[in-house]
Length: 257
Image 1 (cartoon, helix red, strand yellow):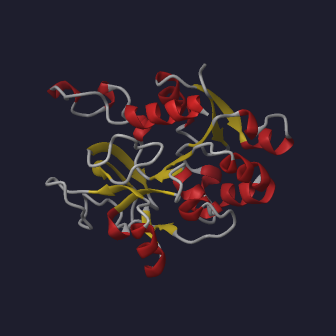
Image 2 (cartoon, rainbow, N blue to C red; image 1 turned 30 degrees about the horizontal axis):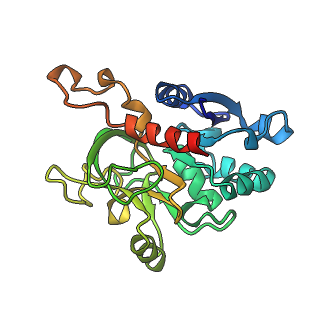
């Protein structure tokens, strides 16, 4: 059975089709669902095995990136979200989706309505679109079997600098919630531009909640599920595209629920 995947979208979402294709390619049954369909009850979040908030510029990123969609989710779908997470169903937020998850409170602590961190404007002061290297850190539903591996994804954002107060940052590190970290050519975590495209503290590119069921990351794994999506594909890339394992892991977990 193919697990149903809710690919949530709204005005300004623009990475939904690519994300849906990545899940379909890895054995899922993605469905594009507008947030208004959940609000009216014509579609139910509980009917899905996995929730993903894809990239883009939801509501034009007015006020703050991801803020309006986050307010919409916490105001009108709080119980549905809480129920979804409490049943052990995975949640993925990519780029703008990561920003939304942080501003709902689902990251870093899965406490809806409690914002403990943020994603700020890039240190460069401009939109950054480049391929970046990341090291996979702790184990989670999404990164199972990938710990220690270096992957390459495309980053494309203007507000991707992860920031949290010192005590929160220390807690995230101590509990192993960092999922991806920007690294340089030698594989070492870095704060240096452009390997770290935004100046994220502790080179954090993605993190999970304590359970490992909720993942958010700024770079786009859905943009590297086909070899030909990589700019150097003609030079003989080795192995499968780096994004596939993340989506495959999520589908495998959802199928076992």
